[in-house]
Image (cartoon, rainbow, N blue to C red):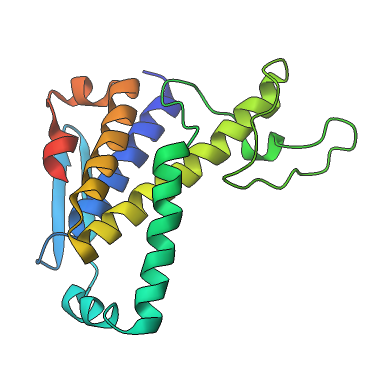
Length: 178
């Protein structure tokens, strides 16, 4: 397997572990999969107190805004799990070489500009992964299962694309893990 694929798989696995860790109550975990050993620290989080905060008007408005942003992304994101990504630093104007500001509303470049399109996909993928983490937090805070379902679907799409589940001999481990 090429080294970069292994690094992507490792990053996705660590991302999944960080989400899983938010559901655990112990202080740390020691994971062993084949020749990879991962020791992760579980953050000290107080979800009960966080739930108390969101009952206050300012925090309630903050949560409503976060949910609206996440809901918009969940229904309109351009993530193509089966497409490879490029380097973010290639998201530049062809004429000047200046960086192009990216936002979730940025349109994809023309398919003929493959380097810039791959860089655009890198921005989309990075943002999508951040939204997976946000969905896990909102699920933990509110118990709204559609955020859990969406996070699972995204992680499983990445895992299926990279052959991760087949490689380590598990089936459905990411879906069961969240």
